Image (cartoon, rainbow over all chains, first blue to last red):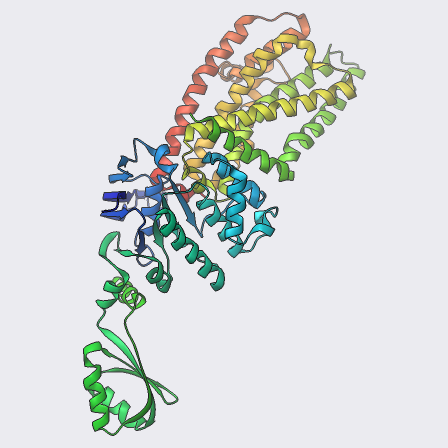
Length: 318
Length: 261
């Protein structure tokens, strides 16, 4: 059994209502995170997912101590966060696509300040290694203001690894990266996980990325944990799949048949897309044969984590 | 208290200082402008019919002494704002850095930059007006300590308000201290203030330092009671300002530091 690096118990955040001078009264408090509990083990990558406003960022900020919790207990590496904050944060780091670094300072200077902050031994070697890893060597002397959004994100990621963290909190780390760089960043994250047992808590809106990287997903909705499982198991809870057919003959008959049976169908040129339950696919294809509907190509898209996310996020909006 | 992390705060702002024309002009350009304007004004007064002894020394000392207060408060408030402008507050406080270490870091910066700015100003004053501020001798030490301490006090109060209410009140970083300037009696004696203002002035620690400065210039002596009064008030205010800033920082954490970036 691997060690638990993070234990979250009944974590709750209620933001107090602000006072409105117009209305001369205080607005209602907002429950952003509502008694959530979960654990992360050594070397595990856990995805924290949920629609906007689900409480993901507030949870990460509470884990960092930059937002104070209303209730609940946080333990990192078996130690109480309130009592051992500095000691714990020495082993933790954070990256978000939405924070910035001092824009006048160069890439090198920014990383050096954080290396000093974490008291990294041989900081020059560490910075050189990270710049090479994130393909940023040629930008070392450039100011942050001269970098593109993607390059800045890479510097922020380099900062996140500067202290050899045992736990990384990553808030949409690959947002704004070009696809090829995002792939190399994902590879780097997985390498760190395998080689050094780095655990990660990972939020992203890219569900394919979450499926690829995360061992487990915690799904938040309205501040509560709605589901917690592996990406595959969560995807399996979605029963519908998409059947694609390149129809040769009987396009009209197909539409009439699908509409009559209540299947969701869309047709573009000769390509038809039918959404139906996975277990009904064989029966559906049989019926097409009986109606003499001919197709030359067929593919079935199985439900993914993205489908799960869309269904659950849609559920919140209903 | 971890020295390396305090050092990292100092390095962060020294790197920034090197690249920032704003910070460089704060440190050198504006003090030089003040010195030229006020220096020329005092030369004019000296040449005019009104005879005020040591007028150049009086005005130049007032200017440099106020620079000490200003530098102390400015380093705290503007360095906090630098983190907020750069969206770097969350990055910074998600490291092992504590709020106390940050406070010590910016106070140390204030001290270094005060030495730099005052040294530069003293050199200009000596070069252009043949006035040597170091003629105050050892008296400069208590004067500067008390002035710097009051600058830090105002700095932590203003920084506390900014960290609590965000950048919408950032103008306080430049204006906050100047509310107290008239009551500090920088260029004129406290007795020249209206009666109500004299009562306010009695609660402002810097007023005793400037009174002491004038006494030292005119008579060559110094009533140590003035320094004791200033130190007493300073100690009280400084303690309260530290408590206030830490309290406001923690209130801000309740809303989340991201909310003030």
